[in-house]
Image 1: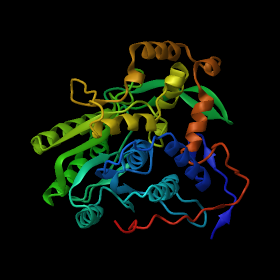
Image 2 (image 1 turned 30 degrees about the horizontal axis):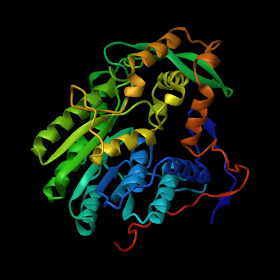
Image 3 (image 1 turned 60 degrees about the vertical axis):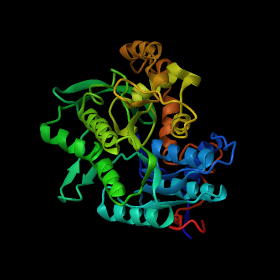
Image 4 (image 1 turned 45 degrees about the vertical axis):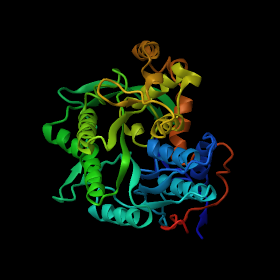
Length: 401
């Protein structure tokens, strides 16, 4: 037992500590948004790589509650120490496992580096022993670095523009108060671009497919998706036209290569999701300001990660036809990329400054959303009460099949 009162210890978007009760409550709130299945159709066997955060977490929760998903989820999270709490993803996974067990799901969570050959080997052995071939692989990994398992080289991603330097508005919190500042990013060189592609592109996704296919673990009709983003022309210089965009282009090319390789026995797509407040997106310059404006413009039309994951799962299950663009990508971002919405966001972006921030952007909502990524600012949680920081990782075997 390690009961103690926890303080966030944050500076802006970065939090030193996560709150276990708050993280669990966030998962509960997501779970409650998801309808239970109407029938008794058996669920697919799925592998979710990146199941503890963002769209990977949302896809995991929707799959477990609404579609009776079985299989494995993979995350790479840190346990609590004497000085710090466990990572938010650790606590979210612990609660997700409890909800899955309560729903009778045969689903296991493993903690490890998805880029490593050792974890791939362990996952493959577990899948082969317990389930056999899988029906679905969801790839939703956001990481700052990747060690190439074949060369041992460590690649580090860079959030930079390509071609020329970038200056733009950004949202900062000075003394807890939101302000519009300016950021300046120097252009990436070729090495930084290539390293970002190695980390955030499709190389590791391809290795997973290769390893599973080599063991005969892809079922007939197998589907695999990797999460991507396009976004607005407002953020394009630092996102779609930057180093991250180069990585996303590689991810999309990988999807086409995997789809061709499956030869009609399965399908591979990238999924272009809409904007979301995630631990990955909050680190990207300009995205926070853009997202807070988008939230103000869309209001109740905003679609959460759970809302979008539910749409995606309906397509996996054959209950809805995929919405594909001319590049074969599944699009979930129609609500964001609607021309009228983007025109309104652009009009606000062009004129926004610190004086007009309160009316042009929903910064209070954004700040709450960032805090909740770490279990803070969650309604109903007593942050003055001591909390148990040492929460065990879910058992590797969920019990009898």
